[in-house]
Image 1 (cartoon, rainbow, N blue to C red):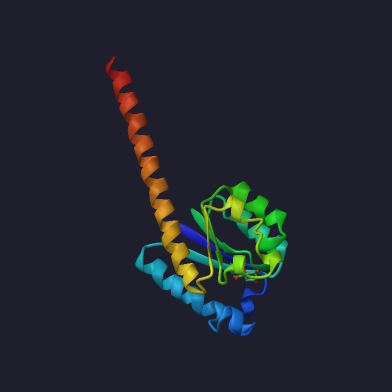
Image 2: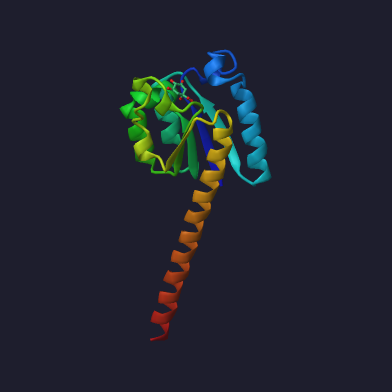
Length: 166
Ligand code: DQA
């Protein structure tokens, strides 16, 4: 199973930008930690960061047929990007939205997420640990999807076998 982690504008500046708000961990370190956890759990993982909305839309679209789920921090685009929301909705993959900060406790313009409504869930306010939580959440969802598919397949086979006996 493969997940793609997508990071929005200015997250490449983590560890430098507003450390009092975002802490001092760099994005590479967050990704290293995620990679370690993915390896331990037999998950394939890929990372993408862009400051450009269109590039993020392109990467989300590429996930179709390539990935089983996404973890996304759209950063400032959370609050104004209909195209990122539409892209997430279009690929219809289980997606977890992550924010380092509790956006609900910040300026009013950050309290609304346009993307949250098309995600399976949102994790906000736990700093870099939120990405770890998101990996646990996505693994849980992917396992549930797998179990459902297996159940469905078994049911279809049982129906076929019954039909053949008649
Ligand atoms: C952020 C919150 C956004 O409002 C902000 O623009 C970011 C980071 C977060 O992770 O807390 O760049 O998404």
